[in-house]
Amino acid sequence: MLDTVLVCYQQIEGVNSMSRYDSSSHVFYRCQYHIVWTPKYRFKILKGNVAKEVYRCIHVFCSMKKCRIVELNVQIDHVHLVVRTPPSLSVSELVGFVKGRTAIKLFAKFPYLRKKKLWGSHFWQRGYFVDSVGANEEIISRP
Image (cartoon, rainbow, N blue to C red; front, side, top):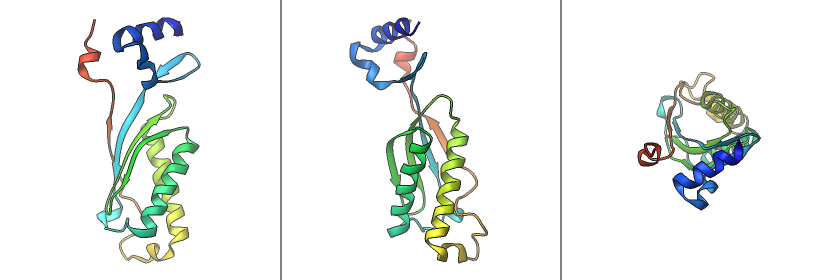
């Protein structure tokens, strides 16, 4: 079955196209997402050592979930993450894990962050933006 899938993808996208896909037992996949989230009240707090720690934490926590970071950009008031995930992991589970663990680490390493009047016990805004990043429409619509 997996060989048949491989041949189909090679015919559609070209012989060397399989490097775009990951595989595990009985499945080829490309679950890639662009995720954006912000600190509470969009405070401009992601700079200096805080930004470095956010960057480090995201790498560590994504690898713990067997995710591969394609691109990571920590801006002063938001984070952009393009990540490839295994098909068994939901986006909401990944985002909850990364945001939750990162907040815990930040509050532990930088206690002054917890003292901001408006934080409460949360570092990140409740929501996030996500968009799937995949094959273009031309490839999808081929017979």
